[in-house]
Each structure stands twice: as C-alpha cells, then as structure tokens.
Image (cartoon, rainbow, N blue to C red; front, top):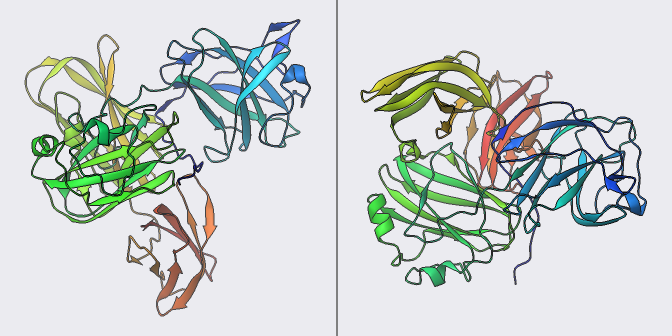
Amino acid sequence: MKTRKLLVLSFHILFFVGFTYGQSNTPCTSGSVSAPSLSVGASCSFTSGTTTGATSQTNAANGGTPLCGSMGLDVWYQFTAPASGSVNILTQAGSISDGVMSLYSGSCGSWTEIDCSDDVSGLMPEISASGLTPGATYLIRFWEYGGTTGGTFDICVSQLAPPAGNTTCTVQTPICSGSPISFTANTGGSDASTVNPGNAYGCLSTSPNPSWYYLEISSGGTLIVDITAGSDVDFAIWGPFANVATGTGACNSYGAPLDCSYSTSAIEQVNLAGVVSGQVYVLLVTNYANTVQTITLNNAGGTATTNCSIVMPVGFSAWDAVSSGGEVRLSWTTESETNNDYFAVQRSQDGLIWETLGLLEGAGTSSDPHNYSYTDLSPDKGINYYRLKQVDHNGQSVLSSVLSVKVSLANEHFISPNPTKAYAFVGENGHVKISSVELVDNIGRVQVVPFSSVEGGVNVDCRSMSPGTYFLRSVNVMGESSSSVLVVE
C-alpha cells in the first residue's frame, strides 16, 4: 500500500512588483474584516510586508493557535477567491528567512484554519488551495517562525494554472533541455489504462490523473528527466520512436516501458542510457496522490540533450545560447514577424526570478527571416537560465522556451564518474589536500557527506543522497574553497 510523502520543490515563473502595504495585526475591526486586500492575479505579483510592530496573538478572535510552526509576531491579509476557486499563495524571504503561513475561511470571531504551511520553498511557506467558493473572502495569516523582533517578507496570491489537458497519449506536450515545465496536476480523473487501454504500463499498478509528454533527442548519451511534486507521483517512459508522428501514432499500442517507477516518493527521476540523436520518447506522469499540486518536469543532467525547437513560439526557427570565455552569446532567428515591437532578453539564476538584461527592436511585420543576437557579458558562475519575451506593439507578449547554460565555476573540480550512483572521485586543485566536502541542493540545503582521501583527491560517498543535481563545495587545508556541479542518480 502506498503512503503519501510531503516534499515540495516547486518551480514558478514569477513577475516581481514590489510596493509597501499597510499591515494588520488582526483580521477584523469592530466585527468587520479589516485586513488589507491582496489581488489575485494570473501570475504572481509580490507585495512587500512586515511584521514589525505586530504582536503574537493566539486568542480565538485572532485565529487561535495555528496548526503548524512556532508562533511569532503575526499579520493578516484577505483576498477574494477567483471564479476557478483555485489559488497559489507564495511568499519570498526578506529580512525574514523562515516564515509560516495559514489560510482561513469563515467570519469575524469564527475562523476555520484550512491549511498551514511551513518550510516549503526553502524555509518559506507556500499554499496551493482549490475548491474555494468563488467570490468568498479568505484570510491569510503570516508570521516568522518563533520571531519576536519583526522583519520583512513578500507575498502574492495568483490563480493556479489550469490542469494539464494532455490526458491521453494522442495529445502530448513537448519538453526540452533546460526548459522546465510546471503544471497543475489533474485530480479525480480516470486512469491512463482506462483512457488508453492498449498500452502496457509496466510497473504502474494504477495510473490515475495522467499527463503525457514527448521529447526529441538532439545529442546522444544518458538522458535524465527530473520529476518533482508535493506528494506521490509516478511515471513510465516509452521509445525510441523514429519521429513525433510515429510516437503519437503508436498510442494505444505501447509495449513495456523502458523506465518506470511506482514508488511512494514525491520526487522521481527518469534515467535512460544510450539514447541517440533524432530519437523520440513518450513520457507519462501520473498524480497518484490525487491532490491539487504543482508538478515540475525538467530535462536536466546527464550527457544527452533534447531539441528545443519543438517548443519554440510560432515564427521562430532557431534559439540558442553558447558560453565562451566567461560570456554567453544568445542568438535567435525568426522566419516571419507580425506587429513585433521588441524582444526582451531575460536571465535567471534559478528559473524562478527573472531580470531583463536588454531590449532589441523587432522587425514589425515582415515575411523575411531576421537574425538576432545578444551577449551577456557578466553571467553568473554556474548555471544561467535565459528566455526571450517577445512584445507586440499592442503590448501583448509571448515567452520563448528556456535555455540553460553552464558558465565554468572558479577552481572547478575534476569529478568522475559524473553522474554517479554511489561514489565520486573529486580531484584536488593545485595538489592541495581537500579537508571538507558538502553538497548543496537546488533550494540551498547543505549536507556534509563522508569522504576518504586517495592519491590526487578524495572519494565522496553519495549513497545517502537523493537523486538530483547538487553543487559540490570543498575546502582545502589552505582554507581555499572550490565548487563544481555533481549529478547523483
């Protein structure tokens, strides 16, 4: 029997707009809701908040004692549920780096705690809620974990993305290298084995709430696809197929999957060795937990890459990013343009928060090909994410797929094997002995790992680490630090 685990690593596209908001230490004044209102947008638009000057309250009129987290100085907000009845409430650290948040329904003097969140996005809270009554008022309570002095934070409320529409293998969505896809999982749906009964589902004893994807190999090697969610998800992958049409056309007759997982984990990883350029693979992700949750797919790690032209906006024929000499050169080509005002070149360190590096004027309306390029002269060390925002004269915009580029880290280690399933040899820099080693995951959690000294470096024991991509950091006996990227399978 499966049991549910809770571990959320969610990736969101965030648009930051910061402004100071009036605070309320109580949800109501004189029997009426008086907490400041947060708008519910199509995407996240952050509001800056503070707990400075607030008090810690646990009486019934002020929500009582919350279900999670150590109580601190608390502040309140309200919002009106959208027509969909589904929202995502996201917070971001300011001077407060460890926050807690609760969601309430009801009325003044009689509040019901719907959910409580602690340590979801790093040490900050996040709540995804569905089934809310459209037009009804809901309250949000935020506080610093055990905080007594007050501090700042950011908060937003946005509508959850609609559930994935690709619920049959005849309708599949493309994914590609460096272009994470985040979607709201379907719930209450039929099994894939019911919708498409002709396929062999391998290890999937059940296949509820299916979402179907495909990817095309552009360079061969080992293919790794990370699947992360808040609760139990599973997957199966089939192939290779000669092309997309063949892969889709084989729907209802797929044989045994090449890789498959029916574990209780909220984190899964597809791992295929020996994939070849031009091959197409079909991926099924199922939401066993049957809860409204964000699932993120990212073709990351490994030596194989996949073709991003399959997810390019209409009119693009090329989009590329190349690192050289500490710079990243971006180039793209349009075959035609309609009412195109400009391109905004955007970069992110984590695929979540984006900054605009520069603007390039578009060609307006044209049926001729146009080539564009932009050079990022000061990329961050490590992985950089890039995308284009194409803006029309009427203000409408569309985003390109996301490309990831690795800029060599200072004093980077030689690591072998990489990826690894057990041990990895980490070479010394300048023949100076390594004295400590730690791995840092993609939300900043640090784990010291055991290692043993050998000639020329150390052997690092990664057997206790969950599969994923980590920054390996070491310190040598001279006190000098080095960093590298290590993939654990």
